[in-house]
Image 1 (cartoon, rainbow, N blue to C red):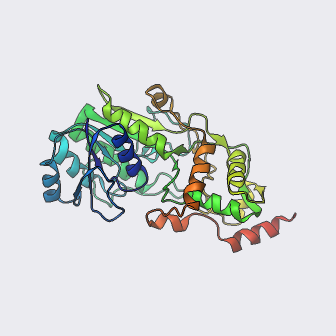
Image 2: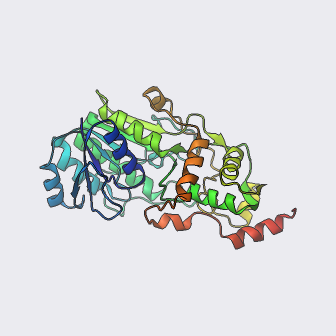
Image 3: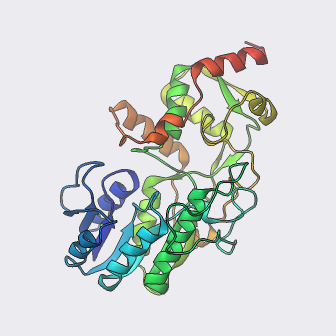
Length: 341
């Protein structure tokens, strides 16, 4: 099996490369060489995926049985289309990392792969789309939906779309789980979002990587897969696990959404993983599970991420890290207003 990974030097891309090498596959990576070192054992090609010349040079190194694209990120659909068209004749299957944000109903309603998508043309530029007043839909979601259409236009039924919600685990660059872990380690009274029994569905980066590789090697038509933990855990179980693995002597203070909102706590960022919308954690992953998605217990993800941080884990610098987690001074002020000890 010969595979091309677009990206491949950090978090999910790095795990995909490692998993492919363990399977004995020949791996080519394509990136700008800025976000991290190339993994030993790969054929590394450096270039810019928005450059037609660099893509032409990459295509000349093919063919590949499959490509896994982990780096479309914030790119507009027209740039996704450029790469897909340049490589379409050199790859058998295209596994594209997308997001649940492509759904028109997210995060308000339960989602399946049949749920309607946001409408964005495959050649849209970075100005297309908008973000709603309540944070949904998002311009990011429109752009990613357009990226899916771009890959479909170039690859047809050879395209596979993975739509995860939240990915956690060692190497995380966003900072959601690392913030909760460091906060738990600090101890004391911890501001936490009620209800404590709210179920959440993050997935481990290693499990997403394994499923991406399975799909790269699959035969037949592609399609879309929601990627969410089929069991998940409650927020109380999540916070307790963070306290347990860090040894933190903390106590969560479960605070109503109304009180958090009244104090200006921002959902999803200042209080990572907290969102009040009914569909935020109601993403049906039955199709992916039926196709082989296996998710480890999230307690293992939490413990392994803490071990990575303790071993001087250093994620790739990313601006999203700095927006996650409430400032200690703000948290203390809110906790004081709630009373108790």
